[in-house]
Image 1 (cartoon, one colour):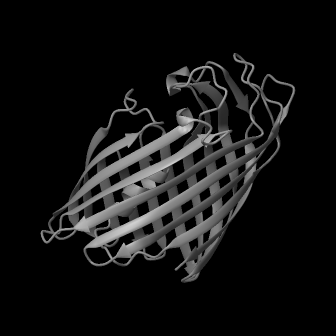
Image 2 (cartoon, rainbow, N blue to C red):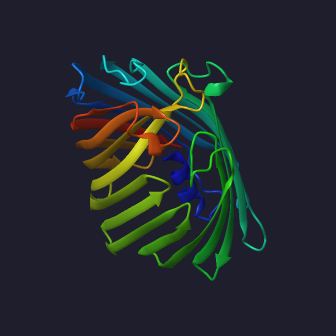
Length: 310
């Protein structure tokens, strides 16, 4: 959900106060059976993220980012139609640069460019490269509301059956108070509500099949507990695939609970949950999900995350 997180971050028109952050997260899934095959699937996932401003003041902000997702598999599972064995390792490595400028009119214009590779052999060739580009214009509407105009390009994502074509978007930010904020539009819809000071309710949707909902409760200042639901997916370009437009997709839904302890510069998060509706397939788009596919039984998972801010 990197693009979704970036758009949410850009909703805030405040410049010059961004802290750098880096974090590492490891997730262990339980060893579960692959349906229709005489094998099981054991998955451990590692995520590294770095986001830090190179320059910032009240009107300009230049930010560099990098992230790496590494998935380590122990399985003999194969894609049934092609006979392709699921790789032992999958990588998603990306780096990006973003810039925002606030004009005297308080309009804010920004753009970002991210380049990377998601594959069993990242950067194997130009066919495994991924390019994401986003432009966003934040136009205030009154003291607390705003119009958001965007243009998004993602070489590895199909939106509305469009691929390799920039997709325009428009949304309205409605924020009548510090306790309620909603973004209604395309490509991002999100709601954040604080019915009481200690409780935050959040929900967001990003096309085409990414959903996030979370309730967070502050027990005391540094300690929070949360409960949430996510529907998400990953995709990779396998180096030896037959069709260069095909991707290996992994879909899952998750129910998650955990706690987070946050000081100003350090945060620790412990999470556990249940992953279901898990399946892999290779194809160009979601409509091909019933071809060259195998399903994996539901799993439990535990995760730990360590983050730093400066």
